[in-house]
Image (cartoon, rainbow, N blue to C red):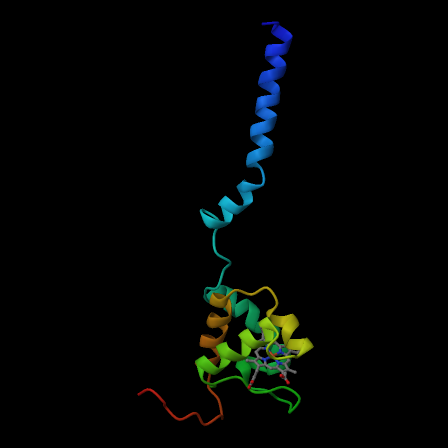
Length: 127
Ligand code: HEC
């Protein structure tokens, strides 16, 4: 076989394999190895600073415009946050706040606010 043709074949084969695999690579990365978005204590602390600008420090609102979220049931907060993210609750401000967050991140925020001191009276449901 002509040497030039052989080299070209090899080159084309490499190109073909790369072109075939390339679209699969990001999908594989998402399934394996790629670290989950952060939702640990540090992340929550950082995020909570943004929330605080409306909901008050540690979720105790200083103005009737914004609901107090401190001390609310964790399950309720998760539900509400998911509803804003997924469009089941229609509020442009809150939708923007939680856009793109994972379930784990919303849960972490809910857990944090549920634990904060509050004037809300929340009866213990599952003692
Ligand atoms: C720019 C102001 C603003 C910021 C920042 C903000 N929120 Fe809100 N939040 C609101 C408003 C306004 C509402 C009421 C929306 C409605 O009428 O549904 C609300 C509602 C909520 C509710 C529902 C409360 C309930 O009793 O149903 C939760 C939970 C909540 N916010 C959590 C958060 C968290 C967590 C963050 C930070 C990631 C955050 N918010 C950031 C303005 C804000």
